[in-house]
Image 1 (cartoon, rainbow, N blue to C red):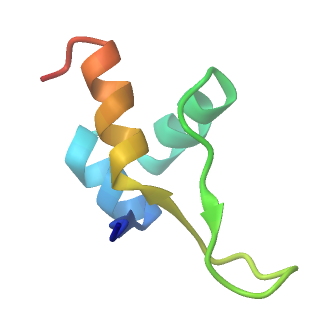
Image 2 (cartoon, helix red, strand yellow):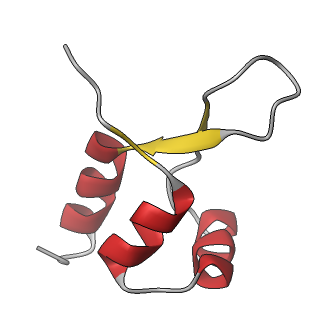
Length: 61
């Protein structure tokens, strides 16, 4: 199964929110990002399937 990974800016644009709002929502239950690089790397992304499921659970579709 191929997983599509979205970067923070892509998720924020998809949801029409700022990065600060994305970080705030993450603290309130938004799906956690997955690491994309070696341990200690700051490179992260969000699985599109997780974002889609979160949106569907909130009636955003």
